[in-house]
Length: 259
Image 1 (cartoon, rainbow, N blue to C red):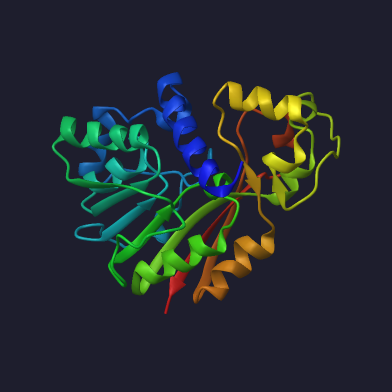
Image 2 (cartoon, rainbow, N blue to C red):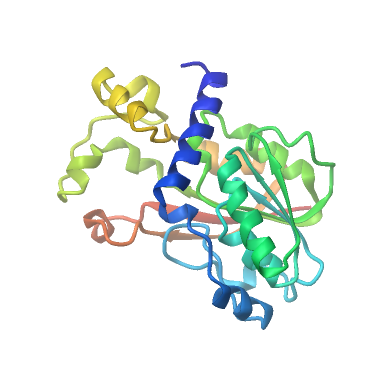
């Protein structure tokens, strides 16, 4: 499967996750939006820990936000209800549909654009104050382009908030981890297409499960620096409910500033 085929496959796979009701595809309810309109809101870059509010501007009114590969009816509608001018950019039409559905239900304005997170050519330079990019770059094989494009569309003084998976997680057999057993089976950088045996890969694609990639910390952190951003904050998080949570933090989130 080449990269173009991968893009089409993962688009279809995430549409399928919407049909299945995956946790990242379930829209927020009216109560969440009502609270956000009153200034009571939180959003996630990683599975459990909400992003600290001091990573955001003091007021979200009029803040130009790009939800980068974060559609699903969750973060973008909350930020719009908090007062931001929100654009949702995602490769999955059905995930974008969840954002549009909440926007219509709640009378919010969210611009929805379908596209690859590595190619933001539909968006102008310096056109956003905040890029919100939750854990999703694990679904593309090359992420330096993601950082470069995010930096390009940020205005000077703008901020990129990004979540990603600790690359150590990809070393281990996932089924064994669920039994609290640490069995090293793979290498990082990780690529489902190359490191899964053919039977496992065929099983995944038969179920329309998104294919994943594990990127090095150099790609994740130095990649942001190379794009001209300055990392000003970092925290770790866990899956929430998995045995591995007792042993290691499996997620990270960063705040990076464009000077």
